[in-house]
Length: 259
Image (cartoon, rainbow, N blue to C red; front, side, top):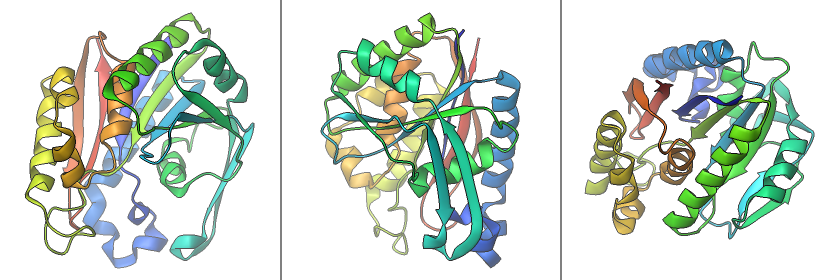
């Protein structure tokens, strides 16, 4: 059945009310956007959800091939909330077998919180969906595009309904109080990414200067770029559900409406 849904979203812990406390209302737009994403994902009847996370330290694209995942949020002071998901271990093995890109498999049942937070909200009504986390790597943009193309080919031959979501926050350098301090590239990066997505300009995203990306202190470019590699040559309209930055970090939420 191939690809049936694709989206991008942030992964801030402040989406969890018990963690955000008085700050929860400041992310109301993002929370509302997650509710829309959750409905769209549910409507898509996806059977496998691939979620992509930035990791600039890896030397290979890394697929987590565990058959079950669990997460807790004790790191944020939330000791009651726990969640479990089924893993798509057979599908991860298929990708490793079919793709020619630099890929390795790992087996880790404990999900990174940056993956668990969006999944917590997006899979509330998808009890049987299987999760496949992919971490990006410090590789060339061509290798990203090649891997995206290979993933798309594998998806097209699959009998499963597949969703792909890229998670990450935008610039952490929008103002002096931002976690990474202020850089002029921060706001420019956020505005440029939104402009390029809304104009369906994947080539423009690919052509962004590497130093510009680095100086923006983003954490979503490479997860987004791999997703764009997957949906290259697919006709879509990017639905920008919300963008906000109440804490000096940009949070963009949206989905790619396939035509």
